[in-house]
Image 1: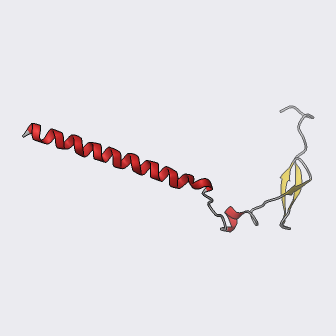
Image 2 (image 1 turned 30 degrees about the horizontal axis):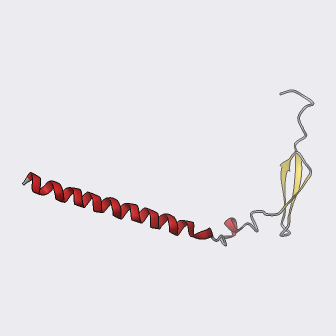
Length: 86
């Protein structure tokens, strides 16, 4: 590692918009953030899954049509083979 070209690694005070403050280490002495582990929905358990435009439902309907279509084709093909073998 070359000397004199890397920034100093110092203690950093982090300030969140929710009012939470904590200390960590960084190359800058102070950081301001919008979200932290105290206010982010994933960490607080208040996360909501949003289905924009019914994409999940549309996928499930498409998948259901393919599955039923393949099952019907398989039954019809099996029915045709059974009398020929007997």
